[in-house]
Image: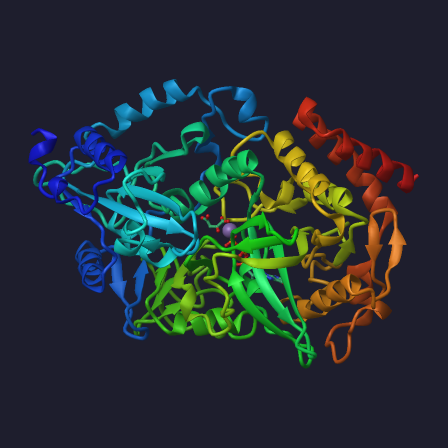
Length: 603
Ligand SMILES: Nc1nc2c(ncn2[C@@H]2O[C@H](COP(=O)(O)OP(=O)(O)OP(=O)(O)O)[C@@H](O)[C@H]2O)c(=O)[nH]1
Ligand SMILES: O=C([O-])CC(=O)C(=O)O
Ligand SMILES: [Mn+2]
């Protein structure tokens, strides 16, 4: 069969030459049975969802409108960092924290994997836009995929279809993102509910702004607008163009006096971004509105301030632990329907359930599609199970969420999951010190990536798996942006840790809505109205400096959560040394200086 006879290929609703040529090439290589140009309409969405139900990928939920339960192949549940590559021309541009392969060599390998890989399937062409469609220079992309699950998810997570294609002028530039589950069907062969391949590649060619993904259907590996484009490729663009693409939530904090501050916060995967972004303050009079829960693109405005835009259109949130007590706004968002739930449990009456959502039902179908009862020793839901839901359903969405100008950031939080050492909050002395805090950020690994959970590793700016170039160059980029900016107008940087534990492993700080007390202190520091103690690691509040009124937590625990412990920090020094040695020659001298100064202060 030649490409020209593939039904649908000639139905292109565009005259963009680069797009037409690329689609033709991919169709010839992957030989799908048909090509569909995705328009993003309601009618198309119904058709895709119905096909997913037919295939057994989706089970419609009786208790939530237009919502579906999906269970993945049990081997395809998270990002695969070992199989993720930055194929820059020069290996030195990929650096010590990424996997690298020569781009030509990688293309040879993957071209053979892609050859005929869409046989028996439909090839979908999804035009999409990351960030507001009304942007002067919209950030366009096209994902080609053979997965209906990806089409349905991209519809929630991105501005896609006709409305995005309308911004593809003839010469418009866009990121090419090719995805296949890598499971061709022979004539007469039955499909499985979650096609995927044991061989997986999540590959980026930063110079060409190109993404090739093969073998996985899981979110972070397959929804290529998210981590692949908006972080790995966009971080390389941002380096070249003088802005920042970061793994950060964006929230709006409103004081009782109606003063507004915007805060961006970077925590590693499954370390609390979505929860903080949607927080319900426990302190009277304070309010939070949400702008984004995972990614922030930040550029300097004409007034010299740093403005953040969320490139996404939906939330792809960790399900376990989410309920009306911890994150009521996420619950209200998914209650409105139009959502996909992957690898959670299914209740007998057609609803979803996961660990942390109140009382255990008497019977469930687990994410492994097995009977589950409270007596079961297995978890009902995978720890990295996810809900995928439209942002616009969030009841506390900030009205300016779609403004292409973005919002001016007053404070940046870096945070990790550390059982010891790192206090609840520490304020940096200045930008360079804040960048040092970010560059040495550490966190225990979570189920969001395949691999061992609970191991402390350095996760700079919560970007370890997402920096699309050399980490040393990335640190330098952060330092330089600060140097070139008006220091008065730069956001103030803080280091937070909601996850410090007591001897019996209990969390010392109640977290969630109570984190509003920490936000309030940070804002008062900006305004010069809150006190702090100067310590070798930065400015740390004492319990008296925080608003703890009506806090239901033992005073000793709060004190322990806030404590600076010099011995624990001395134990941290060799780990930072080792990390900086790994970065090598490209480590900015200013960060080396910060490290030496910290050592001095710790004695
Ligand atoms: N103890 C404690 N747990 C928290 C807090 N905030 C979030 N968590 C838990 O941390 C886990 C991950 O939280 P999320 O907010 O989904 O994390 P995320 O950073 O958005 O994760 P990704 O979507 O993977 O990037 C969930 O199980 C939460 O219940 C907190 O303040 N304290
Ligand atoms: O990308 C994903 O699969 C989910 C996510 O937000 C993360 O891991 O940070
Ligand atoms: Mn994330």
